[in-house]
Length: 98
Image (cartoon, rainbow, N blue to C red; front, side, top):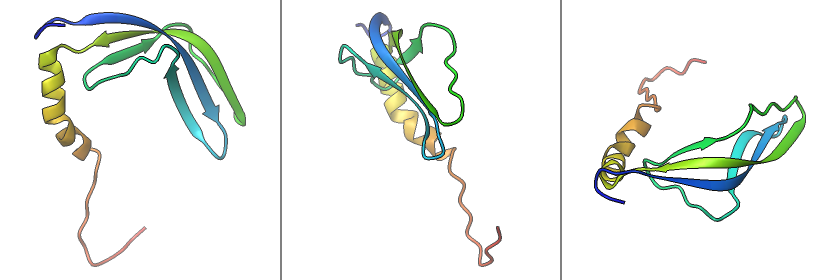
């Protein structure tokens, strides 16, 4: 992998979708042990998976991993903290309202 080039990798994966009162989540587990690094993109192949309320659905799929170039990895590491801070909202006031 070069400074400006990207690599594409295919990996078998298991997708788990939970739509329960206790947990609402979607997880992708790579069956070949692939690891995702900052700046990498992952696209899971196949049709949309829907789970009705109270169900946990698990399916085997294939994922396409587009590895970030070295320059993109460095940029993501440098700017990632700023992007996370955009999700935070801070308020410093004496009154508490709900």
